[in-house]
Image: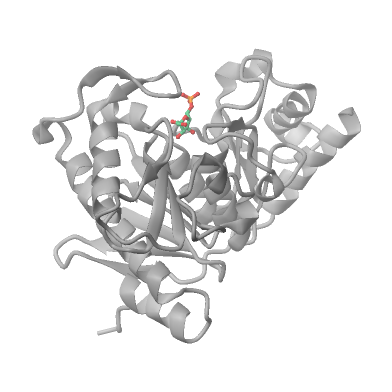
Length: 334
Ligand code: F6P
């Protein structure tokens, strides 16, 4: 039987041979992965879990919070607060930082998370996921505040996501390529199944919510119109379109077979729709480490200096040559 590499083995290897993971970061990532297993368990139960109805709370983004969002957030906070590796956490579901309580040691890392991304898919049994990102606390002596988290995405030491689909997968980067694990539910371990994810540089597939077309900026409209024109248009080939409305699922598809994922800023979403710290930064790190490119249309997302925890940003990411083409259209337009 072929030897299986588990998440633990992979992380130990990154620690020993590549010096990419400290013992503390390894433990932290294992705890996050364990929390994802728990969230996946609740998600897989569907209506049988007894959770999933709208609570009536409105989260900081102004959206109705589902019960499972709350549960996923609690699972992550409870799993991560006691280990000693973290100083604080922020989440799409919390107003401000959650400081590790005094009764536990505070460590050198900061955790950022989107506990249940794409949660509108829950009602229709569609894929959802958990996105996370790890930064180093730059001023270890001090209790971190919001400013401690406002570091550009290029400072991330790890990022990943779990996708709760037909199989539960965990995609991870520690800055040494992007890898994918599949959860063996019987054994309870994540097994390395994609040891070196590479995104093809060219693609004939794009993902965008076309119901926003009337609000798009001219360069985005130009790009999509050219794709839609297919063989007889300037691109000289047909394009395919996919939109799962769950960033984890759309990005995973791009990691598997290439493509462009776009949620650009537009006349309605003037700053963009997706969150820089919880969605765009971790996904950009993952995409770049797999050979892809991630921009806000023009600038590299990982270079953006955040100004607020819940800041939104335009997102264009995926196959390098297509993302660069869209950036070129923006440059030409300006
Ligand atoms: O930010 C949450 C999210 O569900 C993403 O996962 C997804 O890409 C996007 O919003 C879907 O947006 P829309 O509802 O406009 O299709």
